[in-house]
Length: 224
Length: 224
Image (tube, rainbow over the protein chains, first blue to last red):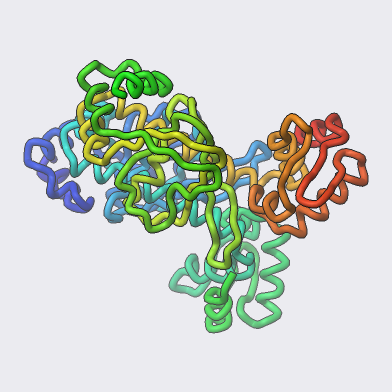
């Protein structure tokens, strides 16, 4: 078990280089947790007693408005140089964000005591934590930039290409796509109808099939 | 000088409670810096060798798009429990944000070495730093929520009330108000024309005078 955990540490940039005693401390002060796809991992009001590092899977971090509308903020992936939900788990402030397992997820849950001790003792660990915070802030700045400055048709084209599976199809309703891009459902419907007229997509219930990839790619590359 | 600096530390939540030796280290490893109103304090590409704590004044943190459009992200105020530009100064990632002195600004510039040493040695200092990060993330989440979910007329009404000086006047062009709210100038012009028709404001060159505060307040309170 301990051996296995040490193995996982190697997936996180910097952690593999921790001195042996700190690695031991990290392994002892953490446990492996699992979430099924669709499961809520954290939500507003959670005290965040553990810090999660993603070993496997993807977590979508999103924000809900008081009226129940949603916007996707960013995704946390496994294997990133440092994939932590730190920013939201270190809930000194009341976050309005929540995190949902987008796939089956395996994560290392580090207790707050261990986290604090490692931040105090290891410059490497500190650097990793601050990097994680910085990356999330950069993600949010990018999202704000997208929402404020980029044309919606450009963003939708890029997102369809990103979300399409091997069957060239995006399995998502207009409402889900609206949440992804932080806009209204009607705006998505109107834009998709336009894409369909151009022969770039074909729509069916809960799915969008890409039929003209070149056109979508041109649109995704055009300046917002 | 040292005595004076110690005095300033009292303005920051938590710092006054630091043990004497850490306070000494903080004072020795920092210097007082001044910026005139309008001066650029940090910008994309800065390596951020110092961490700033605001003693006096206000810093506006904003983001510029590639096409030169701007959006205000948040303001850093003096006297907040912990007002640091940490998030942007700890530039492990390439930020696209920049900070401008909105008033004359006095700040404590803490060297990176001192910062790192204090993070390692003091749980109080660590808590303050993580709180600062969390607050900025919360600010960004709030901004995203506003942009995505709130009606622009509601946001503009609230912002006019917030920015109005003692003369009940907001000294800002339509473009500046557009940057404040992350929208286009034409949208601001159209909404202000509507407010003027309702008798809530009177417009003149580069200024908006509030003439119907009750109406604006009602609008600002209405649900987005």
